[in-house]
Amino acid sequence: MKIRWNWGTGIVVALSLFILLILGFVFRMFYVDFHLVEKDYYPKELNYQQHMRKEQNAKALPQKVRLTQEDNYVITHFPEMFKGKKIQGKILFYNVVNEKYDKAFPIHLDSANTARFLINQFVKGRYKVKIDYRVDTTSYFQELSITLD
Image (tube, rainbow, N blue to C red; front, side):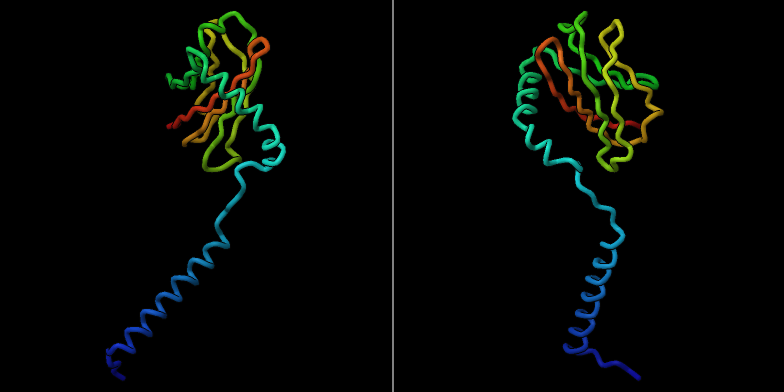
């Protein structure tokens, strides 16, 4: 049997392909892993003003916290003005792809005012590093990005 190609046949073929494409997207959505960025977003939203104040405090500093990669370490360098002061807080390595790869550490600084983290304890990829810390009575928050290879 030979199919005659005309306008009607072309329209039927185009609509059939379009329907198959839509059905492919629908079936694919059942297998895509989606999740909220934060599970406890509501309580965090209530403390948003306090968080904004911490960010403003960090922006007002003449020196900011820096991140570097050296050898097998990710190093956070805290400002020299905080040398000798007690810094409390945590550093969160937030994996932008999958939350099960997130890592949180309390801040423990060495004599050079830095904190070191072994790279091999992280999955390769891009991270947002969220540094929430307190010096004396002032709180700070800074967010940096890093790609670990």
